[in-house]
Length: 183
Ligand SMILES: [Zn+2]
Ligand SMILES: [Zn+2]
Image 1 (cartoon, rainbow, N blue to C red):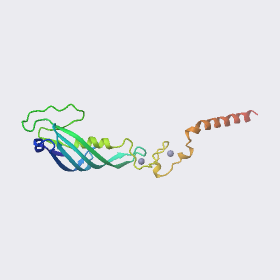
Image 2 (tube, rainbow, N blue to C red):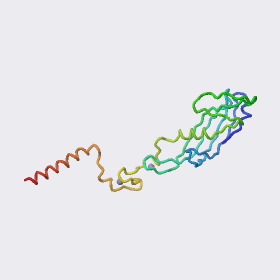
Image 3 (tube, rainbow, N blue to C red):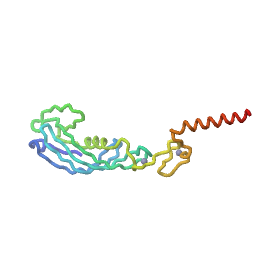
């Protein structure tokens, strides 16, 4: 979403304008647009324009347990200051503050919201998304989606705390067998 802020750059510090957002944004960089909606407030600062707002969208993510792709509802909070590359009155180039991830307003006074939306949306995606709170995940042996029912491996699965005992027990059985054979 591109906003021409030439008028606002000429306005006094503290001057506010609000914009409705209803935009397709390629959040994941996979050429699939997610519809982003909400509103943003633009405030003239001494250095540029401060963008603040809360936006909403749904973006496809992969469940960290069952690997199913599902739409995750995202709340995107934005608070970014945009710095103009040229002075709006004189047209002379301006030095951009050396701050990590700072956004710029181009020489045509266009403020492009999309990149700020994209970056903040990525931050809002949880590290381990779940398709549902109690997702059963995949069987680690056969890979079956356990949300669709149990698999056969489940019965032979042994609690790791008992596996040593089980090994000892089966070793004991073998030695008993040998004893019998030698008798
Ligand atoms: Zn899942
Ligand atoms: Zn299984």
